[in-house]
Amino acid sequence: MKKLLVSLAVTLGLVSFAHAAGDAKAGEAKAAICAACHSANGIAMIPNYPNLAGQHESYLTKQIMEIRDGVRKVPEMTGIVTGFSDQDAQNVAAYFAALPKNLGQADPALLERGQELYRAGDMAKGIPACTACHSPNGMGNEQAKYPVLSGQNPAYTAAALKKFRDGERANDPNNMMRAIAAKMSDKDIEAVSNYVFGVN
Image (cartoon, rainbow, N blue to C red; front, side):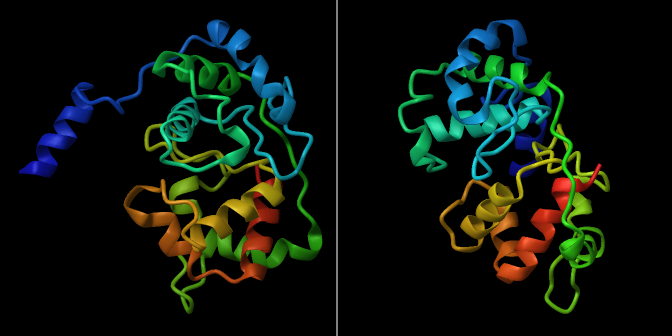
């Protein structure tokens, strides 16, 4: 019954994490502070930083708010989003979501294992296929707040997976990414991170 009420509340927009559309134009000026690490076009020049261009607005909003509120620890962003209101977060997210996403090219040397993990998983290790949540073309799921992985910097994706695996990052719903990453070796992480960089 409790689950039914929560589901109904989300559907009707009665809870605070229900997504409201941001204003990309209003977000442009606020996003200027983000350019130092993520570039003005939302495609980070530093491989350890994520590309934000073309990412789902709902996902970016969630991440900004959780970093601001201390749910997700990102030392590099300490103080940067502290003064953001919920509407600021939505506006900045809308701005980056509207930009053309990065197009990457995977390293052929890691392609086979990365593709296998992404498309089929590894049943022997209990690793499910990434496509189940992030779609065959790496475009994720806007409604579920599952991120776009296509074109994401491999170094950033690998670091994120290792943080989930090591419990340093814990803002995944129902422990989902932590449970999956816990079964992945460094080589698995490197391969799938490379694959999603080039998947389209």
